[in-house]
Image (cartoon, rainbow, N blue to C red; front, side):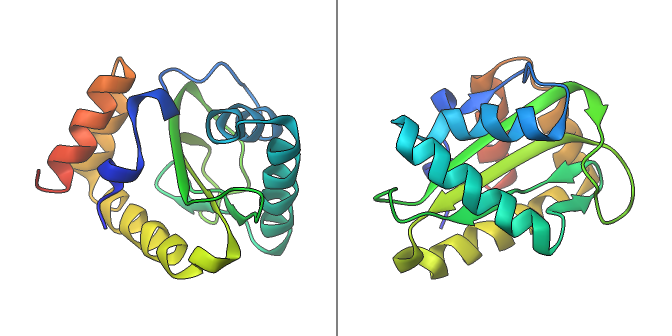
Length: 150
């Protein structure tokens, strides 16, 4: 599974307009949901997951995710905030780089693979820096593809 296959430029926001955790979640969810009912369901799934443990994984990165059966397939969105925002990250640091994963329960395996792949990629400092320096969705996608060896 390649993240660059799951993530298209129209699901990348550079920069994100939001300045707080809840708004960032809403903005990213708006990139994957095609109707209000889906958006509400994805938001509830992501908030429920955040209540268990923050998806701020450290390194200034968060990967909010949730399972939502109103989505027919696995969807990925990403974005960068101009300034770091508080996200209750595991390392206590604010976050600028976001990836959102949402999809139905039937694709739980693919969901976990995508989460694992993102985590492995963003642990590499040069990859994080290139993604954070992207000035457009297309540039972000290109950096992601290059990091995956494409």
